[in-house]
Image (cartoon, rainbow, N blue to C red):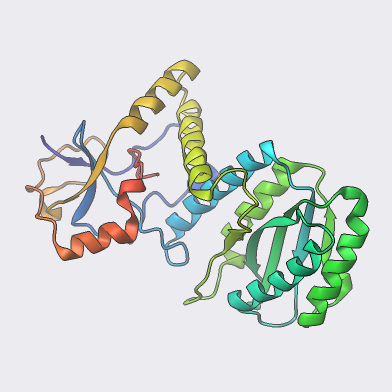
Length: 296
């Protein structure tokens, strides 16, 4: 069956703002493609290196925002915190300081748990955003005092500079926290390593792998609806797509033309080599549900 490795199809009207100007992972090897076993459709995958690839960083942020929002619809956070410091903290240092804050907090609020998103100032300092569950709003004053006391005792921070307030509008604050690091001015410096989002083990209502899968399905459905596909037909198309299997295949780049409407026969699939297997492990292709525009 011929393979067509096509560029994303142009959409009529404005692009979704989160994808504008970035339409594919630039780090995906040109001699590999994800191939639909049922249709022969071939697409690029994702490197998933969110600190190196703008495209993968954006998609990861969109998926994370959707995951946290779906979680909040079942178990909403009650408190938002933005913690700052004049120190140039590393991600491991932030983790240790937050562990100390959480230990002190759980002594008073055993159900305390949170989602963490870090961002960077123009000077390169880390700021920490927290979505907090398990703290009753009537005890916000005590919680705020505890957080400020522990955080400021461990870092070069002023208590007045820490923002701790109740969440009144869940959807807006969730999107702000999960998507805020997409701003170019708050991207990590070159070579920075670390997770820009994380959560305590008991924050999500279901395991993160399950919630992220639900978020991807919800986003795929939203994309279909945004393109004008009727609701019932969109749900049916999503069901069919998610039942399909995608495999990693080797292709000859010189025999594949990129572009809308192009359908060229690619070279026979290359034998799976050690390099191919290592790439498969790196991108976890068996968990990628690639869409025609390379969005998983």
